[in-house]
Each structure stands twice: as C-alpha cells, then as structure tokens.
Image (cartoon, rainbow, N blue to C red):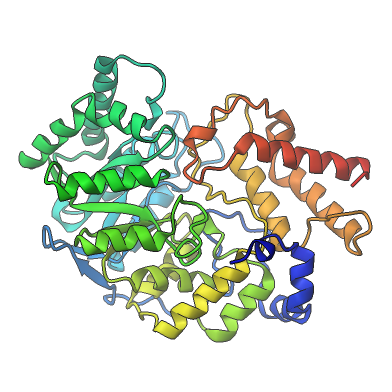
Length: 474
C-alpha cells in the first residue's frame, strides 16, 4: 500500500468511492446507534433459529481435546450499574444465563484471567460453570504478571506475587487443574527485559513446567502482544527443546492479516510461524474489539451485498475459523444476541473460499483508509489514575469517524451536523470528569496497551479537537 493511499482523507476517500454506497447502506441496515457496544454489535444479524448440536470442533493434537471452534472470552462479562453489597460488579445472573446457553449450543472453551473485569472474571466464570462436570469444558487462564513488571521489584518479590496469582487462580476457578495456562502478554511493554524479569529470572516458568508434569496444568502456552523479537525468541526456545509450547494465543483477523495494524507484524506471519511448527493457535480479537462489525456504512453495504443473510461479524469469524491451525476463536460475548450470532457462524462453520478471502483482503484495504484509533476496548489501560474512561473516549471518536462526523474544517458542508453529533454524543457517552481534557500525560497507560497506542498523545489530540468545536475555531 503506498504512502499516498494511506494518507488519503476520509472526505476524499468517500468522494472517490461515491456517496451512493453510504445511502444504500443506510437504507439497508437497522440502526445500532443507541446500543452500548461490548465485543461487537452484529449489524444486520439475521433471525434464523440458532442451531443446536452443530458446533464445529477442532482436535488438539497434543492432548486430543475436542475444542469448540467458538471460544468464550470472559473479559467482557456483563456488569451491574453499581457494585452489590459484596462489592461484586459482574452481573452473575446474566453470566449464568450466557454460559448455560453457550454450553447448550456446544461451546466448551472458556478463557479468563486474574485481571479481567477488575479481578472478578475468574470467580464469576467458575460460579457459572460449577454445575457442569469438570471434564465437560476447558478452562484457560493466565499468569498476568505484566502488572508487576517494570516496578523495580526484587526477584524474590516478583516470584512471590506470581506464585500468589497462580495459586489464587485455582481457588477462584474452584478447580484442581487448569486445561490451558498462558504466560499473559508476552511482548508487552518492555519487550525482552520484561519477559526475562517476569518468567526467566524468577524461575517461575520452570515451576510451571513442573506443574504441567504433575498434571496441575494440561497445556502450557503464551499470549503474544507487541514486540515480534520476543515472539521469535519464544519459538526459538521451543525449537531448541528448552521449553515446549502446547499452544499460543495471538491477535488475528482479516484486517491484521496483511497490514498488521495492532501488532508489530502482520498476523499472517505469526500464524504461519506457529502452523509450521504444528503449534495449535488460539485467536483473540477476531473483531478488533468490535471495530470489524461497527464499520462505515458503505463497507457494511459491501459485505451485506455479498452475503445478505449473515451478519457483518460473521465474515471475521469465518476468516479466523478457515485457518486450519486454529484451535479456538475467542469472542467476548456480553449480550445474548452476540452469542447467538456467533454460534450461527460456527454451527457449522462454512469455510471461506480463496476468492472470499481475497474479497476480505480488499475490504481490509478500504477499512484502512479510515483514521480510526486502533483501540480494541481491552481495558488493559484501566483504571486511569486520573479517572479517564480511555476506551469510551476512543469508542466515541471512532464511531464519529465511521459515521462521517469528524469535520476537517468549518467550511465542510456537514460541519454543523458533525459538530453537534460529536459534542452531544461525547457528553452522553463519556461523563465530563472522565473525558480527554483530564489527561495529565502521566503515560502510566502506555506500556499496558497491546496495540501500542500513544494514549496521552491521542487524548491531547481529541481534547484539542473538542475545544476547537466548542469554540467554533476549527
């Protein structure tokens, strides 16, 4: 892709594409403007019956596990408007309902972590699963020690905190073994020094290998974010026989496949490196935190014209599922309609043809023209010490980009409409005390971001844009 093409303005791109596509899309789709986005909003999802007994499974060659191709990501469990009397923020009743429905329809892989949903995801997941036989589902959780890294902790303290986190996962999950255990966020923040500090200097990785030998861990792997040199080093350890990875979790979707927007390298390179070694792949962010279903109208129309019966999101899931080395594709399904729509994509999976894959690569090129901020709403940057709601600020900005409500100048013909839509929507979706204007530039969030977003710089840019709209000086 040429530099000139990457830098084309959104207005210029729409002129090149033609305004008719936007009109056609607007007429074809139901409005989703008032729905709170979680993992994704399945624009134009169909209302056919959700299949039972048709889930697609993949067999783990290491263990023989028959794993559902749709995995439940437990990072986005539904939450209560305010904590209950016990301080719980997760809506356990809704979680139970979602898990029951997922299991009824063949989902058997549940991925959580000690840090998800303000530290409450593991307990909520276990509570929902406790009535089912332990051997009827697979639990995945993580050593999220990146939260301790870079603080100058003594090696002994890093080891102690890691051990406490590991042991607490067994308590929270109400289990005596973990099916899939991951070193969380390998490549985060400090790259190789962080990996050494977290896993090698402490000896915690050697301990986990022994736990696997003892049967406490059935599969040991890692989730990758960030520095590809770290990814290559971890695979080198595998090749040399120093450590054996039973599976690896990567961010993969049709947008990242070639362009590699969120990662430091195209997803195809990561996937092929694992497939060549026969290492099963677990997929995270198949929808880029919902951005591949909340698309500009004319791109939605392009996808719906090709396959009017299925949701926009189904294209992304079919893309991931069509890669043979993929063991499971995770989705954080906050709402029942998300879960139902995703089950349709995998029950059974209809693999993409080569021609359909090329269609998606071409679609990704179109999406890439839109200057959205590459936030996946993972909440790793939260909580902000100054109270900002960073993901919500980015969600609103990206929504306005996709809807054509980012003005470049007061001379734009839709300036008044765009100005009102941005300012009114901003105050409605993000409380004033949590908006970008309160960013101090402390940069505490920067090393936590898997997408390598310069969050303070983006906050300052958005705040400057907001002020120019308020003062009418754009």
